[in-house]
Structures are given as C-alpha cells and as structure tokens.
Length: 461
Image (tube, rainbow, N blue to C red):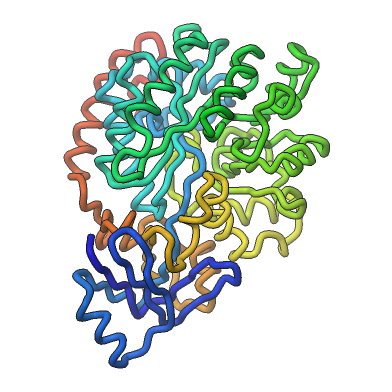
C-alpha cells in the first residue's frame, strides 16, 4: 500500500460544505487519507510526487468517496434477466427460490464474486449483502470469501426466516442465531477490518414475532446492525395487519427492532406515523429505486423522508430485480423517479443524491467517522470517474455529470483501504474473464436442471 498520490483531477470531497478542489489532489498513506487540497505545480507538490510509490494523474476525471451500496443480494447474479415481467411474489416462487435451492456452495462463491466485481467497477467500495440462502453450511463463507478475494469492503447481513414462503428455506431460531454467532467469531473484522457481520431478519411477513423479539435482543447485546426488508409492497402490509393488527414498521418498532442501528430496506408503503417513528428512533432507510420500479412495488416517500431529517441511503438491490448493480446508474434513477412522481423538477438536486450514496451510506452502516467523504484521517476509499467521454463531456458541473451522465463503465480507478482494486477499469485482484466463464458454465447446468419443472429457465431465444 505505502504512499499514493491522486492529483490533477476534480476532487469532490463530500465534506460538510461539499468542498470541491479543481484541480485537486488526495494523498494517501497506507489505508488512510493524509491530505486533500488544491493542486498546483510547485515544489511542495513535486515533493509529494517524489514520495509516493503510486502516482495517478486524474486529469479529466472526477474523484469521489467510494459509493456505499446499502442493499444487495450478491447470489442473485445467477438469476438476472430470467424474467423481466413478474410481480414480487411470483418472481420469488418461480425464479429466486428454485434457483437458490439448486445452487451449490461454489455457485454462491462465483455469484458473489461477480457481484463484488460489478460493484467495484461501478464505483462501490462498500456493500451491504443481505444473504438469506442457507441450503449449505458453507454458503455464508462462500460469499465472504468472494468479498475478501475481490478487495471490496462490506457487511454480510446474515439473513434468516422461520416462516419463509418456501419451506425448504426456513430455519429455526437456534439455527439462525447460532450461525450468526459463529460468523461473528470467525469473520468479524477479517481482511484487515474490511469484513463486518450484521443481523438480517428477512422481512416482517416471513418471520415470527418470537424470532423478531429475540433478534432485537440479540442485535442490541452484540451491537449489530439490523438490516430488514420493510413495507416493500402493499400486500406485505396486509399480511402483518391480518396476523398482528400492525403495519410493517409498527411491528418492527413494537418488537424492539427499530433504533439507530436499524436499516429499513425499501420502506415504500410507510404512512405518516411510521415515518415519524423512523425519525424519532434515528433509523436509516435504504432506498432501492431501480428494484422498486422493476418489480412495480411503488415509490418510497424519499423527498419527505429527507425533509424530516431521516437518513436515506441508496442501494442497487439484488441483480435479480435490477438487473445489474450499476451504482452510478442508481443515482440517475433516484433523481428522475422522484421528480416525475411528484411532478416537481426541483426535487433532489445532484449533490443531494451524491450525499445519499456516500455520506448517508456511511451513516447507515455506522461508519461516518471513517467513510463517506474525502477528508484527512478517513479510510482511503475513493473512486475516479472518467469524464472525457462523448456521453459526458463537455462538463459544466461535476455533480450533474456524475448523476445524469456517468455509468459504471466510466469508472477508471477504485482504491479500497489504500489498495488499488480497479485500475483503468479492470479489476486487479481477480481474473474477471475466468470467473465469468466458470459462472456461465455453472448457470447453463442449473438452467438445464430446472427447465423441466420451471419452463422459464428453458432457452426460448
């Protein structure tokens, strides 16, 4: 790692004043940012160049803090594009569950590794992976190995459901909490602190009240993030109303699972009282606009949440409902969705959207002191995006170009913890083509296995 200099680019610090240096530089030592400032060709800057073991000329590029992908399901890279016209319940029964049950431990590794590569190459240095398929004891470790091998930073939210619609995916409370404790013992803080473990009750209609109450105590005692699908569709509200006489968020609050370390994923169908609960308890909402549109789930009340002071971060969701994990693409969808939904072009200016992807994401994962902005003392996680492209340049405002023009293919450099993990748009820690070929071969086998019972997996083109 040693010393690295990124200079001569537009540096968007995302600090408290959204300070921009044009041109500017970022100086890294080991895994920490040491200096950020304006660049000028003088003796001092010559010294920095001479001292650095790695020097990157960012001319024509915008340098930003690493994006935090607040919600995904990495295993779903094996399922993207199987069906593009199914509502959530049908999508789960006919695509996600069958493929999940057919996959083997090495499949989960390959699927997760592709997902990590995809996230890195579209600007995410941090992912929150909600992993809830535990058909083999090795599945969690397969995903975590993929994170480590790719060089990305992230959380694995150990999902669990004791009332899942697919009976073969159900677990007992003892299985769920025992496995989570083992993950904490074996993986928390692995890879020089890049790996963290969270608790991930799957949702509020696939979990019993007893399990949710125990999860609240478990996460509180171990100081864990609780990462939960909440109010993604209107039907989910009906389910908890019929079972408990409570809306989704009301149930989350009543069992004690709503607090500062809670991540409310989706939160599409929340009423005024539920928004107030989130604000009062200091929880975060993870907004996944592409997935919500893809599955026709609805539109979360994000502008209202932000105006109330609720912390809203962004996520791609899994590739099964996106179909990709292009973190830069999510920025444009976020802005455009809410403008057209409210018929108000003034909503969500570019810098606000960028803060959701960086600063707010860091707050949601409880790491505002280390991540989310380019400032001395913070972790050396950053991304350089090439603006010298026909679909981006000429650039008037870097913030607008990033939100409305750029996509994952424009990412040139990614550094995580001081390590260069993407250079000139290519992952440096793994052989991407070899991984893709192995994954395609396995998907072909799985499709053939499933096609007889689930015609949607049969070749039809």
